[in-house]
Image (cartoon, rainbow, N blue to C red; front, top):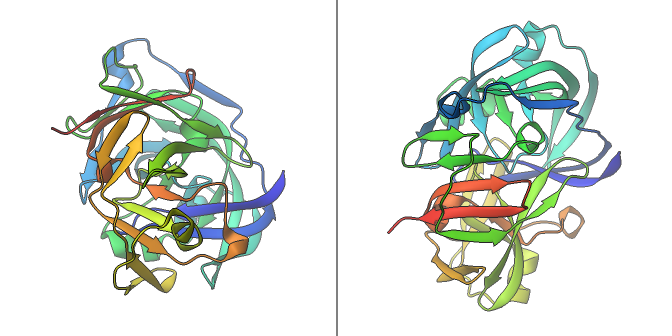
Length: 300
């Protein structure tokens, strides 16, 4: 499957996007829940910076691996170190990351497991994780995207610090989600920003709301002073913007931090920006892929 698509790693204060044109098919031939016991369908997570979600899992014969769960990453990424350890061979390519170039390998994982969820034959990118590990201060074996999780509805509970694969019975708010599965799965949330329609990439790897600059002008959002930030992709500019609230469905939610970042027109996708759930005060979030709904509770 060929197409222009955005891939981003949301492990920094503000996420960044990897964009290129390539032929890619993220194929997961089997997703399955292996245990009907609700407690067995729940796994503990570790939160860093209040929003980054880490969990243990396994790939092939390697267990006790450190995974970052990131719904904004397309597709799943594994470390080159782990790919070499598992003797995974794949096609090499060089891709652009906001003006920089990095080498990746297209490899197929024999089996990936997170709690009760097992995914067979998932095609992913193997990359050098060292810059991300230095930023996070921890070993990182994989960044798990929705290509590994989207066949199974799940709940992230930021208060109890668990991911559950048994759906909750109650929730405060429900809003529709727009599921995209080409060339790899991601979820968009329809929203109103300053009374104007917008579509936001739901991004658990982000701690704020970031809009693309070419969309900010159309929304008429006030811009504050610019500032420069450095990450593994190099230096780029983050510009604080003034957004008092975002409306999801009939619900007006306060925004903790909002930014604008430059993007070339050719890198634009079908969304206006990225939003981290915790930046809207969400304490529990369910992504239900059967009903195509998001269910969430808000901090009081």
